[in-house]
Structure formats: structure tokens, C-alpha cells
View 1 (tube, rainbow, N blue to C red):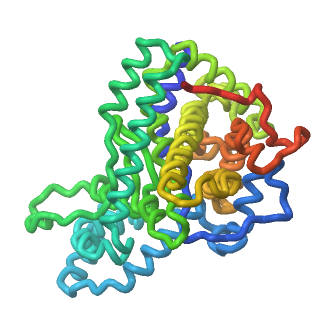
View 2 (view 1 turned 30 degrees about the horizontal axis):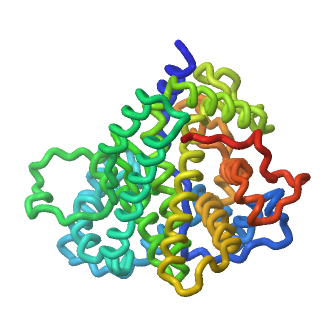
View 3 (view 1 turned 60 degrees about the horizontal axis):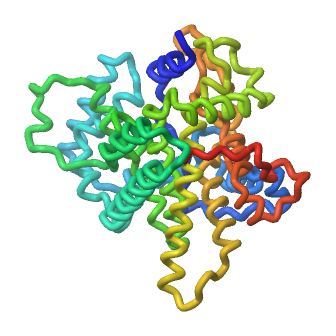
Length: 411
């Protein structure tokens, strides 16, 4: 089995649906005691972890956990009619008996069956002006998709056969915004065959961040929530743009496999992540893969996301300047804002940051995640961008200072 087949096999076995992100309700100050040119992730995220007490016991991306707490509060305030509440509790009890007291599964399944209509009718309580933000998210997706196709078409680095495959797959890509939907009146018919797992999966709109499947980019409400803020609109676009661009990177990867440019990027990213000290904690030869090989698909998507969302940020900035009387104001600050927004997407809870690379599952040791740790995804990501060093005025001796050897062009 060649290395490409092994990577694809590992992807089929362990699909991690989390991508990197944050909530704009987090406006924690930067940690100016840390040099961003040496430890950019900590410069952006350390105060955020300190600000939110749940960071010590939850395991995930902080922006999503903030949104989930918000959802929990809204749920507690919604008035549930007694008949629905009674049916909900009865259904949940039946599920617990059938599913060996799996509380999370049964809670989600019961909500999907009996409370989804209530959530759908009150979507603006969870995210004010939801339709406006939904429209904006679709605009961001369509712009990124168009720009990615344009980049592939114009590239001198990509073979024509690869271009045609990539463009065809991109043309088929769609954005799916997961949200509660009004159910038909007979949806609660007791004669319907019950699949608790399927029902629980319908509740993903509150808990999923983003994932890609069959050329469809799925984003949960925590991502749409990023656009609901009083912060500058450009910052919000940067955040959502990066999340969506990462998932588009997964679609781009498949037609790229085996091409000369893919081979070069694969070798470079593999060596970069294999050289990390933490790679020693990854079980040798798991699936016959090294740490850099196992995390490659996510690292490739991060690379696509950084380059594509940065270009998107520039286009948005140019458009703003054309519509402004003051042309080209604060360019350096705009680039700083982009990179800070990028890092904020990755801020994780303390427990998540300390999560082992290998965990026990059903008496077997398996990789905990297909992603590298957030700190490396941020720091190695910005290190590849000369614009980062320029914006933060990094000196040659700084750890994250750009060097030509770090430059990886996809198109």
C-alpha cells in the first residue's frame, strides 16, 4: 500500500469534523508581555483562556464553547408547552432504556424530535438577524469558491489535467448551513421507526463547527454567530472566511494527489511536522504513517485556508478603500488584524491544548485527532507568510520570522 492510499485509508477511519474557529463575542486583549514574532498563538490566545473559567474543564475551541453556553441559556428561557415537555421526557426515557443510559445521545435525539420546531421558530433568539448572517455566510462561500477556481485556472504550478479535475470538483461544491428546521406535523408519529443516532445527528447545528463531506461544506450555527457582533465587519469576514476556506481545502486535496506540486507540498509539510518535538509522542507507524503524514490532509487545508482567506481579506480591503474617501488607510493594522483573527479561530481550552495525541477507545489506542495541535497550526501557519513578518516587524532571529524555505505556493 503506497503512502497516498494509507492517508486516504486513515481519513476513512477517523474523520474529525472539527475545524478551527472562534466567537467574536470573545474580545479578550492581546498579551503584550509575549513577543508575537516568537509565540503568536500565546500572544493572541493566552488571555482568552484566562478570561473564560470553563477553559480548564471543557475540551474544544473557545469560540464554540462560548456559543454553546449561550445556546444553553436560551434553551432554559424558552417556554415549552406541557404536552411537548411530557412527550419529550417520555421519549428520552425510552431512549435511555434502549441505549444503555447514553444521556448525551438521548437528550439530542429527544430535542431533534420534539423541540426542533421550537428552535426553528425562535432562531433569532439564538442568533439575532439570522437571515442576514446566513446570507453573508453564503456570500463569503461563493466569493472564496470563485477565487479558488480563478487561482487554479491561472496557476503555472498546476498541470492542466489537475486543473480540470480541481475546477470540476469546486464547481460542484456547496455550502450547507446547519440549522433547526420546521418539521412536518406527522414527524412525531409514534409509528415511525426510531433511529436515535440519526435523530441525535440532526442536533449538530448547535454543536458542529465545520466539516466537509461529498463536496459539501457544512457549518454550524457557532460559525454563523461569528457574524453577529459589533466588531468591525472585516474582522468577522476574516474569521468565517478562514473556516470555510479550510473546508474548501479538503475538496481541493483529492484532485491534487499525485501531482508534482502535491508531492512537493506533501514532503515539505511532512518534514515540518515530523520535526516537532511532539511527534515523538505519536505512536510510531500508526497506519504505517508518521505524525506529519497522519496530519497532512488537515495541514494542507490550513495552507489553502491561509492563502485563500488572506487573498479574500485583501480583496475586501481594496473594495473598502475604493468606497472610502481615505484611500489605503491603516494597511499595516489591517494585516495585523487578519493574522490576529486567524489565530483567534484556533484558541482552545486548556484541557484541549493538553489532550494527548493518543487515547484509549474501546480498549484500543487510537490517534485523538487528525489535526496537529492548535499552537503549531497557528505558529507554523503565520511563519509561512512574509506579510506576517512585515506586519509585526519580526527580526531575523525571531522564531516565526519568514524565510524563503518556509514558502509553500499552492497555485
